[in-house]
Image (cartoon, rainbow, N blue to C red; front, side):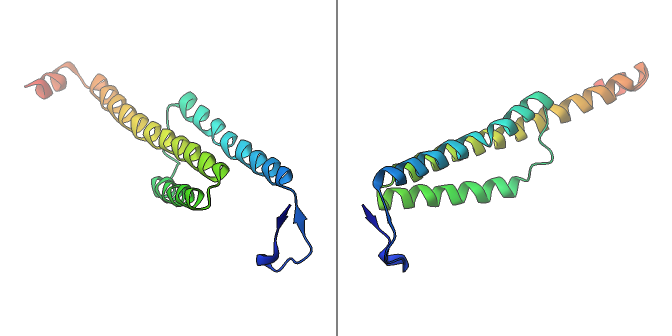
Length: 124
C-alpha cells in the first residue's frame, strides 16, 4: 500500500496495482492523442497553423519530465515523456518539411504562369 501522508491525506491508501493501472492508462492516452494530428499533417501536407514555439516549450517540458522520472525511478513518466517528445519532433519536422515543399511548389507554380519570355529572363 502506498501512503499519501506527505500530501496531507492521512487516511488515503492506494494499492500499487491501482497506481500502475492509472499510470498505464495515462500513458496510453498521452501516446494516442497526437496520432490524429500527425495523420492530418501527413494527409493535408501542411502544418502552418501549428506553433513552433509551442512545440519547443512542450519538448523542454518533456525533457524535464524525463529527468524527473529518472530521479524518482518512475518508468511511466520516463516512457510517456520520451514517446511524447518523439511525437512532437515528428510534428516539428513534418511542419518544416511541408513548409519547404509548399514554398518550392508555389515558386514552381508562379514560374509556370509566366510567359516564355519572362522564364527565359530568369534562366539567364
